[in-house]
Each structure stands twice: as structure tokens, then as C-alpha cells.
Amino acid sequence: MKKLISFLVVLVLSTTMFGITNAKQKVTLLMDWFPQGNQSGFWQAQFDNQYHDDLEIIIKSGGPKVRTTTAVASGQVEFGLNGSDSVMSANSKGAGLKAIFVSLGHVPYTLVYHPNTGVESVKDLDGRRFAVVMGITYWKWVKYKYGLNKVQEFPLTGDLGLFARTPNQFQQGYSLFLPARLDAKGIPNEQITVESLGYRPYSVLFTSDKLIKENPALVQKVVDRLSISFHKSLVDPKPTRDFILSKSKKVNAEIHNNALELMKKDFLPKDWSKIGCQDPMRWEELAHQMKEVKVLPVNFDPHSSYDTSFKKGCFK
Image (cartoon, rainbow, N blue to C red; front, top):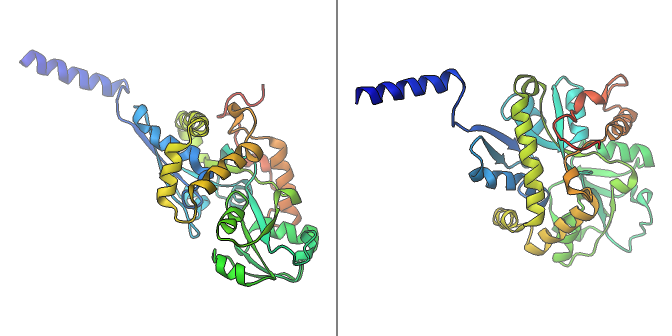
């Protein structure tokens, strides 16, 4: 017995000294909104924790009052989801963040309006009421680019009934969900996507410069897991779909499935192995647009806000 105890003590000391441990590393990824279809790959990564002994990924839901850039910059969570314009805006104020993985080729912002109300182009929205997230960057640029100086802005609440009752109102939303939700309620609608107007921020997962410097291996593990989980969630979407539907009263199975098909068609690369990849030219283009509306200082370097080294195989 004494020999056995001595052996176990030596084994424990050895594993401690040489860093051999079975303890999982845990990280939290904070979403920018409540659970919905465009987050499927992230939720899949959490479901797959059971198959991995080295890393536990915890997904935390967002919402209208959640500021993912602030949460990551302050160290409350290790990773966050947001638009690439939000990452650059935060960095211009000293946040010290870097995008490491693209989840959607562009944030699916859209402007939804009533049909048969004289709207032939985005310029015809001038003078109307607009439910919008106040101060959001894409809208500053759209107003500047298209001369929309008479729009009556008010805070977005998500009240579809108000939209239905107000013919001269248009509303911000995600093209993946809002038109389909309106259709399901029998509310006629048309849309102009912000991407079609020329503004195309990535939807990105980002982390802090501090974590990249102190533990690049952990960041690499997260990106590698996400590359697998995004592919898995597209091949077999049922597990994440069922979870998201259990958490959301605003989206049904039909809307969710339609959003996934739209993602495959318009928001993800045809080669799914390229999901996560970033194009430096896109960052330069977006930074220029943000400088046009004075959201970024003229000397801001967009290349300080992303790191392409963790997602492998992008530039073959």
C-alpha cells in the first residue's frame, strides 16, 4: 500500500511539473443577439464539447443591451461576435481587439418598407419614419452616400404591429429573418439590403490582443473547433435548429430553414472549408467608408483590427 501511495504521489507531481493535465480549458463566446440561425455554427461548437477533452466552449446569448466589444475588451469574456465595423470603431477608442474568424460574408442589414408606396430606390425613403438602432454606423454611411437628410429616425423596438399600421415607416432588420417574419404574419413588405447599397461589414468573431499575445494556442483551438462546427451545422442542421427554436418565439422552423438556405446562397463561401476567412481588401474598403462619415480618424489602420493567421487554408 505504501508503495502504491508513493507511486500515485510521484505521478501527480510529475503531471503537474510537466504540464500534463486532463483539465479542460473553458472559454466563453458572447453572441450579439438572441439565438438565431446565423449563430448555428457557434451553438454546434457548444454541443460538441462532449467530444473534446481539451476545450469547453460556452456560448452566451446577446441582446439589444449587450455590447460584445466592451465585454471582450474588459475581460468579461474571451470572445465576442459583432460586425467588423464595430470592431474597428472600438479599436479607434483603444479597445485592443482583433477579428479572427468570419461567420458571415456580410452582416445581413436590410431596410424593410411597405410595397406600393412609391419606393423605387433607396432615395425614395427620404422623409419617411425609420425604426433604427440609433447611431449605428451603416446608417450614417447610407445617409451620407445617398443624401437622406429628411428621414425621421426613432429607436427600433421590433414592434411589427407598429410597422404594419404605418405605411410611411421603414424598419431596420436582418434580411435572413425580418421579411420572412412579416410574411408569416401576413404583412406585405419589400426590402433594400444594405449590402446592395455598397456597405459590407463582415460578421466576425473577435478576441483581445492580450489573449492572442498570452495564449495563441487557445485562440487557435477555438478557430479550429469553429471551422469544424460550422461545417457540421450546415450538413446536419437539426440539433442547432431545435435548440434555437426552443429559445426563440419569433422564428419558426420554416423561417429558420429559409435563413439557412439564404446563408448558403449569399453569405457563405461555396467552398465551406473557406468559412472563417478574411480578405484584407474588405477591411480597407470598410475603413474608408467609415472615415467618410468620421466614425474612424483618417489615420486609423484597419489592418490592426484583424488577424488572418489562425484560420488556415485561406490563401492557397
